[in-house]
Length: 109
Length: 86
Image (cartoon, rainbow over the protein chains, first blue to last red):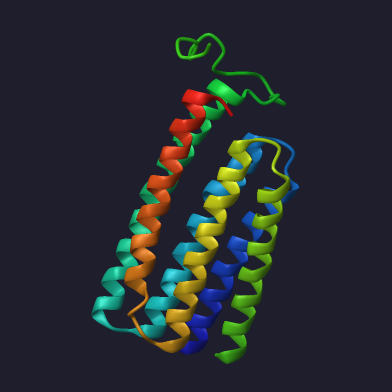
């Protein structure tokens, strides 16, 4: 059981490291946000599974499930807030078509 | 188990170094906010790996509170960027 927990921990840490690689390597603010919003959530899910399998008590399981559920809710919400404010104010150069042109105009200055 | 935990710690250390590099060289404020968010996720992952390696659930409550505070901080910084410009 400890071996399975360790493998889960390594998979989760690898996902977090891939998020770091993406944040450093990508050329666009939205691309970096894409890397930093999704991969750490999956990494924390795997690390939570490993922690549950390693500790194996009821309070630890409850707290780990709370952490993972909170991360899965709060990560997309904070990424959405940050992406909207970046689109409205920072205005990076987009590499593709601007899908929000003419839709999200009221808050731009 | 000790070797697996050590490998996980090394991967998280590499992730922390990469996030700190982006935090230092980030062209605008939003990149630094992204990097700080990722660094916080790395710290949470490290504390959870520590809890798994010592088989104690004491520090998991800390992870829960820090995750909530990080969400609030990212939301506040997003509001700041939206009102003052990035």
